[in-house]
Length: 397
Length: 239
Image: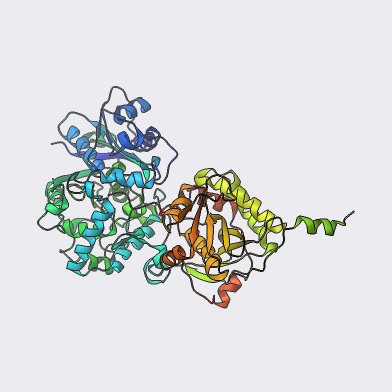
């Protein structure tokens, strides 16, 4: 299998955009292609990650649209839909194409334009990933699933709303350092939990989750240019490689799991990714986890193997996962602060890790980051893609 | 022929005595404190200056809300609306939001507008609640007539409180028929939605004594989403 490098990265600012779906894809893709400095090399294939364009934007076959928009003919093109894990799934498809020798250079772009509809419709569109007979018909939404999950997790492991608020405050603060982040607003424990006014500032969404426990609904796009490592070396590009990808699934309906608090797909996907990379959790310097809800950052940090089960909140409390800690999690702001255009998120996680591993992350740079880990969490943990990225910088290069 | 003073007296609506709104302090999610207080007529020019840049901002109906509020505040300043009042939210003296309304009669109030200049901190929600508090708790009214001119307003008032329909009444803002906040609805919503403490510490009151309009570029960035602190009330949908 040929090693695969990330040659270029780019993204739009996440938030509410006036751009069309094609406009968002183009802006991120052009930024990544410029960053890749491909010269005369052409793009062999384009993979677009997206969850809801057919429903929300009334547009299908959007990978073909991107090829046309950027005049990338005759590149192969396909769209990958895998719920909120679409982004990392699309990267996996690109990696497989290069590893199999079917392409040398692949553009992977994740995009979502969710703000084309109102908040209620956006919530409903995302809820369509739940089990149609066992969950959706009963009015289950992602916040409600996360609320039930959080309640169980908290009762079992002693987490409190204060721990959830710590995730939110950390990720809001990190997002303040990220010019591409959706939310640029520092928050305090007093304002969202301790003051009497917190009941208005931070109202319940799905108890015990409150407003500041939930990611925003965002528009945005993110792109990677992937190439075989030999192409990267020919182009003399600073190489970050995709050292390992893992993917695993779990039951569609959360209630069918023997232990609903166990994110087994995260554990299995992470194990695969680490094994393929020849690395372990202890060798990871920076991680981007799928904190669509604050509880998920804590639970995923345990399931991926960074902390023992039930102890992720203790590491958080001790500042281990903050910028400046030994394992910064979500320096980008995560889904909570950077935003969550669902199809773009998995790609954006890798954009951030690439910046971190190249030493280009500005004021949120994790010092000497060499290995990064991303967890893109689809469904409610029923389809998870984990990725390990490695910097190929030599110490004295 | 009437003197100009006498003519002016004919043009001015009669006024009811209205007890003033007692200022209160609200801790925001950012940890900052917003002082909510009544705005005097001679302070209206500062508010008009703050609103002016928003007259061209289409996003989230800022243009129409700003234009209407501008006219209402100008009419208040020039004594052309009966029994109007205005409250402002101030963070370190800087204007964060404005609400206004008026009394239809001693028992019925009419909400006019809520304009948020500092977005993403539920400033509008706090100020609207303060306005309802003024009508029901301070002025002792029985109900407040309300309409929304933006989807955000509709979510915040009609859905969150929730308000009752009173469609047989035509609200003065025209457009859609009126909705109503009753004493009963207010009392139910108050623990969830109305916050703040009194008395306001002297140093905070002093900081809020002179109203400062936000710097124009910063204001425009805040309301158009270029500086998107603005947006995290729109969350909770994705997985």
